[in-house]
Image (cartoon, rainbow, N blue to C red; front, side, top):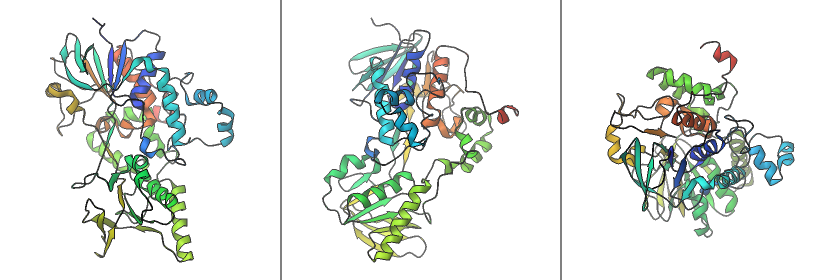
Length: 417
């Protein structure tokens, strides 16, 4: 019989990849396995546009904020690929998205001995001092489970994906099916929506591209130095300790650092395109602000309706792309009968300890940890790359019952502790 694992990771995106690296680098031997239902590593492959850049610094890679000397850093990847000097001369902290995905794949290959691909957990139950999980035909025993099942595409109520209706996560997977489209509609006001609008405008030079959003215009992301402290590891401690009303205020104050916002350079580029077309007398790019898409049919027929005056523009779209974001995968669905042993707060949300462990009753002897789905307790970095390296280290320390280690806080913040 296989030995009992210290931890079993369910899902193998960037979060559990960072955890696998922490396991690999730990001074103590750790028995760990990770299970991923995809046949290989992949992260938002459908939006790996050639000119799209990351919105986080390369220093917020899988390891650097936890272990700056790690051989799994983005800089070590660049050295291995022969591009380190080229990247330095580029004078930019933000790699291409395709490049960062290649970095993830490079790192995943180096810890592949910890991972089983094409393996989906179908059952979890208590057993011994932890859990028994069923993965295919295999029964795995583990003291702790770390759920990192990522995000799920979010579509508006009543909208179903189909031949002509896509979520932007499928953009590159499906765009090859289009032949000389006449009308393309993109719904949404965030970075992905703006990137999708620009992509279609470039890809199909004869198509009319319609961007539809309820705002007056695309809003720029707040990436100023002080606002970016909301992504600091120390900010997780402050958010976790804050009263519920303060948590809500902080999320409201700083939503524009991450949600429904667009890089300033892309906003300006789209504005230049609209203006240029007005000058040339051929309007191919139309941005419909204070508007919504209604009367949507599976065959692409739809209406762009103005929220300001009720005006209606019927369209027969070749494709409608909803860049309407994601929601965290619900971990309760994976837990099955164990969900009834998890404690809830007054709002019905899972109670989570500071080390990302679900609070359970005494019948559960092992630890259930979440990577994602903890925004209500840990703040905006719950499912973002910004804190991935530190979060992975904290979870591993908790699994091994070690004192929690954190990155040193900003001195000004430390003075108020």
